[in-house]
Length: 122
Image (cartoon, rainbow, N blue to C red; front, side, top):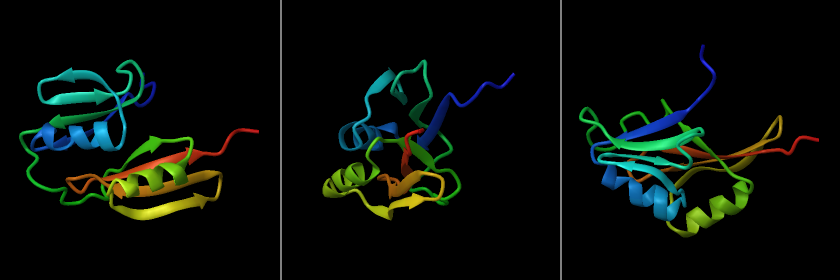
């Protein structure tokens, strides 16, 4: 029985190209570190993984195919903070119908990542 999402992975030619960005710029906390692989956040909860993959070379060729969303409680503020740190955004924060605010940025290898803020349930 499938019970839900556990880990979303972004693969790289060298994990060391991406770990400093996600740890130091985005602000995620490594929860599990192994050679060539890092899970950010609680490894017992849905999390983001970054790893070295032998079949991945260079920048993302089709960064629109898979987009990871990181949840935030302040999409506008986090987007501003990341832009001040030099992160390149392709979509400014936008409130969508249904109560979701999204913005989209590129990591150092060209992968697209979204910040998502869900409206509070009434």
